[in-house]
Image (tube, rainbow, N blue to C red; front, side):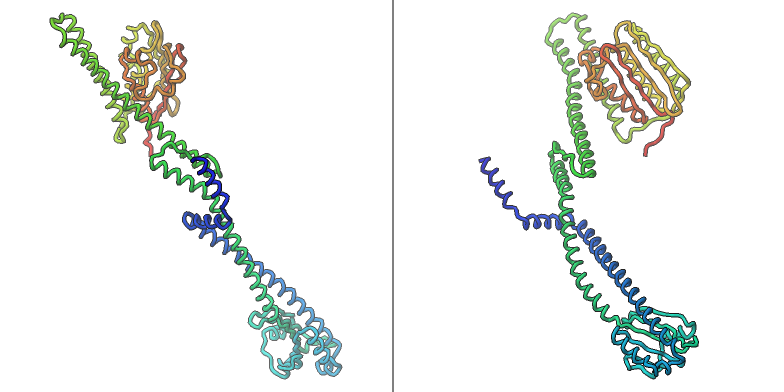
Length: 496
């Protein structure tokens, strides 16, 4: 059955056509990437149109500039021939008018000669002869005797006007040469039509490429969206493949990290609930066993009765300690948890705390030493910091060897104060070092219960230090001792 499905899938895969691919791409673009496609299309269309328009404008201006220069040069050369005659009539009598007509017909340039009365003396098109001319270029030459040329957008003509001098060098007239450039405009109109077709082809190709690009660029994004949807639906074991372009890899890495931490948190929460149930149930079970033992026995000796009752009291105290530590952790986990901050002399606080712990050290014959490098005053919650130091030092004593030692030191720099608790105890196995701050975690459960530990002490320590924006580190070697080092800011700064 499985092989048939696999085969049918292979057949369907082979039936995929180019049309089907583009249909899929189009549906994808329409469904998921409309905004990207519209924005990209607008940019492409504007870029193509402006590029073509720019090149067309530059080319047209270049052609007009070249032709204007040609017309002006021709006008100067024609005007120069009048320097061989004394007047316009003299030039006309010697065949100048005939030469102008021939030149005009040959080069398709209209030539007009305007005398000093602004009357057209000669017009090779025979339409304006003996008419008064109103032309700004002619007026300009009569004023300053300088050449003038340019392109008239309204008429589509290139016009050049130059002064005419006789053989004596006197200014006698103005020669106006006009090149009809409407054919050039027609040519550019035809070029524009062709360019429009090219624009459509280029824009179509670019849009098609844009669609394909969006499809392939967004395919990993679509996959991420599907995976996130699956995770949201409860499949928390799914992860995003760390591949693709840089942004996708970074997103995948961060998302996978978040999910791994979330799973660790869920697992930790489940273990915590299980441990709480077990820890709370154990003393109650012991109390029940002890009480039932007393009830089932007759004429229990007083010393046995007292011994059982003492054991019951011990188990009750143990239950009370667990509940107290749990409530402490709950209060710290709440966002309303606050610190009663005050400027505290850390040297005095350390000495008083260690003084209270000295009897426990003496009972186990453990040497307890304190070393202070400088006076330290810090802004801390005195009760909570005392709890931290007491817990670390008491653990160092409890899990020490007979005739061992515990060294406690206090130091500071311009920003932090440091407390170091070092012991010669049994140490912590390497695989347990990263877990000792977890709630209810014990390296040696049997020994912890013997010493009265609840498995919550170091979790409380870590939370208090984090509340002060500090850090705690541990270094340990099994059977060689353990060192805890905590660092806390001298001045508490509220985090935003």
